[in-house]
Length: 432
Image (cartoon, rainbow, N blue to C red; front, side, top):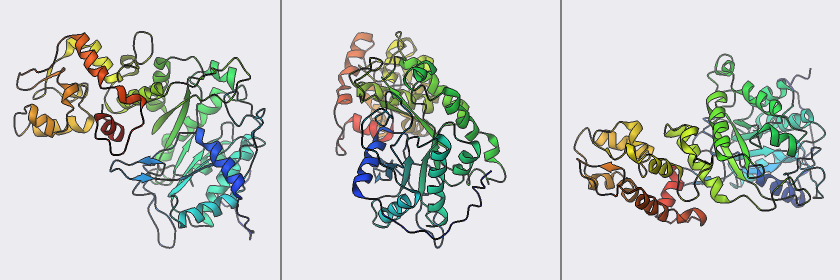
């Protein structure tokens, strides 16, 4: 077997990638959303370039409002697979382009030194076969580390059906990897992407989550995927309900130790089949799934609690409010005595705010003015809480629903960085 760990390099000549190919390869990568701030702690070393220790690498906002960037591109869009939903499918008449590992390395270093980027997200269509594609992705990352001494953030797309040794080798040079599930059920995968299979995607996920990577010789996982793994699901290309999607998400978090599950609204790129919708999936659905995902990860909710009777999330108001309205009998709760898990279920009180309340009420009895100072969103929370026995909200389920829905119009508009609304705050810190 090829020894990927001790691969030796020889002198090579560099040909920079031309603008046309770069445009094709970066445009083709925009459909993959499974990248975000890294969580990596790969620190700068003497004589090397780059540092992924302080911030995640992506086109996203950090908690303190900084925008961080990475080069997000495909190694190739020349795919041998014919997934019906994919713009790069073999039967689609798009322009094709491929970049070599050397060209990508030169591009990354050039952009990094110009302060255009802080790291690399590298994906690819399936070129020739899965092993060839995974080998080229791995060699690109290995060259960056060994030849170019690049110590910044690298996120590699994992290729299903690639050899296990290739995937493990890639995990030693990348900060994060992602094997995208793409479609929420095996039935839809067989129908729309017959060359892919559920086991081919799940098995490498399972392998990357094995406890052996937390132990010697990987030094408490610092040497192997320090930022873990993620995945992506396309929403709206197939008929699965939000309940099905969230149950799968819950399983992925609990079983495979994923850092994030990403949701991508279906965008039509194939109008030659009746198997796919002609209209894009509504963005509000993607937005609600992200809100529900936050409840799964940080608020103690289960997938079965979040969705409505039809198995889908409400477009009218966020899933936490929807749950609270359905369970008005559990409210109001007294903020001065309620346990943390119940405070987290109050609309308008987020994870950080609930922690502040727990600390503050040890020193003084809280009133509504104190809650405002603690950043509780009172126009939502007041219907579900009492302060020192005082209640200022409405107990009528219809009125509460109407009032909460009135504050949800932001869901379909573009947010501004300078917007001081509850929506902007929620988008930045994830609190509901």
